[in-house]
Structures are given as C-alpha cells and as structure tokens.
Length: 411
Image (tube, rainbow, N blue to C red; front, side, top):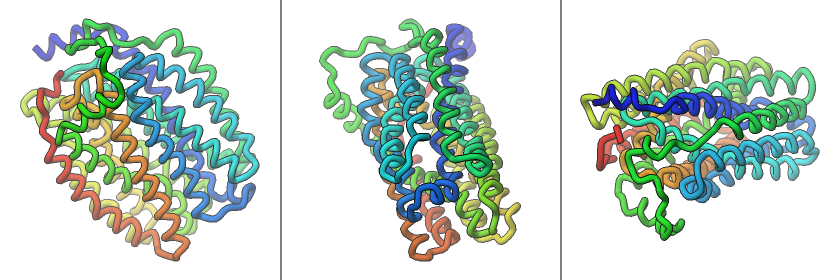
C-alpha cells in the first residue's frame, strides 16, 4: 500500500521540493550572512555586542510574531501564492539592507526581513506535506531543509565579501538573485492538486484565525511540541548566532577563517543529518508509528554532550568535529518537525500550526541570542554559555516523547 502511495505522487511533487530547495537556500544565506560580518559591520557602523546581537534577535522576534498570521494566509489563500510574494519582498528588503548607513536603518531592514521570511517556511513545509504522504514525507521535508542548511553554510561568503570588499556588496548580490528567481517560480510553483491530499482541500468558509488557533490549542500534544521546539531553538539559535565570534575569541581566528569553521564545516553535517534522519524516519515509520518522534529524540541524546565537549576543548579541529556531530544529530529534529505536526493537525491548519511554533521558538531564540551578547558584555565565557545551553536538551527530549499522534504519520 505504501509503495502504491509513492507511485501516485504527481510529477510536480518532486519539482516542488526542488524549487523550494533554492528558495530556502536564498532565505538562509541572507539570514546567517550577517553573523559572519561582525567585524566589518561594527567598524562601518559602530555598535556594541548587545546591539549587534539585536540585529539577529529583532529579526527573530518579528519573524516569530508574524509567523502564525503568515501561516494562516497560506492555509486560507494558498501556499504557492504566499511563497512567491514572500520571495519578491525578501529580495527587495535584502537590496535595501545594502544601503543602510546607521544602526537604526540596519535594524529596521532586519525587522522587515523578518516579515518577508515569516511568510515562507510555514507555507513551504505545508505545501511539501500536501504533495508527499507516508513513505516520502520526511525525506521530501529533509531535502527541502537541506537547501535551508546549505544556504546557511554559505553564510561565510558574506564574511569573505565583507573582508575583501565591503559588507554592503553581499546584500546587493543576494537581493538581485532573489528577484530573478522569484520570476522563475511565479510560473512553475503550484499548489498540490486536490486529489493528492487525503483530507478535504477546501478551507472552511467560517474558519477564521481565532477558530484555527482554538482548534490547535485544544490538543495537548501541540503544547508539548511548543515546549520542544522553543527550547531547542534557544540552543540552536544561540550557537548559530555566536559560533563565529566564539571561534574568533576562543581560538584567535581571523574573521574569514572563523566564518568558515562556523558555517562551511557545520552545515554540511546538518545537511547529512537531514537526509539520514528523513530516510531513517520514513523507513522506520513503516513498522513504528512513532518513528518520526523517536528518531529526533535519539539524535538529541547524542547532540547534548557534543555541545558540552566542543565548548571545553582548546583544539579548534576537535571543536569543529564535536559541533559537526551536534549539527548532524540535531538535524533529525528539523527534518521530522512538520511530519510530526502533520500527524496531529489537519491540512487546513497545518501552516498556521507551524507559524505558531515559529512564534514561540523565535521569541525565546531571540532572547537566547540577546542573552548571549549580554553575558559576553559581562565577561562570561562562551564555554560557560554553551555548557548551560546544552542542559536544555534533555528537557526537549522529554517534551518530544510526550507527544501523542492521533493518526498515522502516513496521512
């Protein structure tokens, strides 16, 4: 039966994944680029570490706050329309970022970037789950998320351009590429055909935003998902935002070299984890309906001690190895998050549900990033900061295991 389900996937099911792969790549290339430009930006626009951390924290807060509403728009008016519009806006804001000359202007563009990107990820993941069911769901999600992580891994390009030229140039280039690609997907990206969705495809006319929220929050497992994803986001965003600076201050590396260690080595491991975690979960789900929950839990059991050990070592290659293992196993959660949500939420509130998860995870993630900057200004070492962060992961695992799926993940 599962084999037949795979054969019935329409041709655009995999084309959709490929198209979204590159949108995700662009989104995260821009998002992480700024963290590799710490020295160049602070020299051009004087600011403290707390202010620099706000550039990412404010982005996350705006991104998170707008995510539930953006997800509702995707549920209500169609995933593809929202995705295409978000890429056009993203491209314009990226171009505007290159023209910022003050901290306030740069902060404003990061806030606008949060709005544009909030419209993308809930709609994209929901669209993939509309096309892919059962044995391909986690794998398809993982391939798309691989684009996200590859984009993040290329963030060092921004640091390199900033060091060799100016920090503004990278944003001009990325914004121009985004405009061209937005035109391409406007012609190719479509919503999933109704017959490919096992649930009714018509959004209830009387289902407003408030009723959608009430439906989601009536499910106890949704609260456990919120706790799991929010706490994990504190850890992951703290590491993402401050790892380049950690390498600079802990090992005395140059900005360009630190950017390579923090992105070019870390994110390929994440990509491998997305693919391995997706295939593993899809395969195991044929015999265990909780496979998409158990695979991330197993991965986090390995990830937690890796953070602890990586922050302790005085050997840069060893730190890179431990952070790489953390990235590999933590990615099991990323590739299975939307499939888990799809097992407890119906098709017509799936994107909204992911938007709510983004809201909570980004707000607390932003707090975590800002706290990192605050603690560094107070001369607290990154070793201590990362060690404390690793202690949150056991709580994440417990929250994950408490989730109860109401129906098979193959739906």
